[in-house]
Image (cartoon, rainbow, N blue to C red; front, side):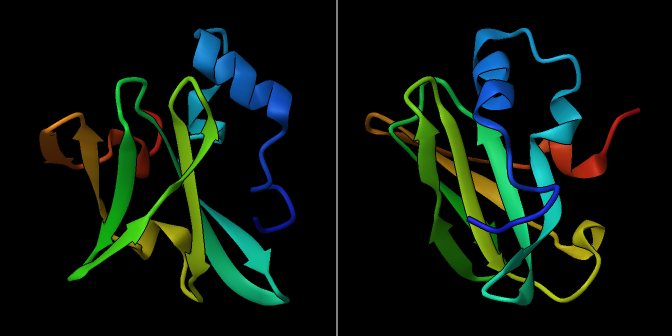
Length: 110
């Protein structure tokens, strides 16, 4: 995973999974990071019932890595623009069912 502020502390992920995270927007959604010295974006989601999750960007589906058994998934990808300009959807696999959704955390707190 990338470095910097977007690198989630394992304690934050545990708090998120247990429902005690004070600011889920600081962990979930998209965040600027650096990977291999290049600009990137990390996207995280909480999908407790998912067997797998993919990040869908335009016509590409990128598998997300499960960070916690409780359903925290993340992926880091190259991205040189501002994080808020990355439009994406999540493809969530739950057993035989597959659903695609817009991640509400990509819009920031209200």
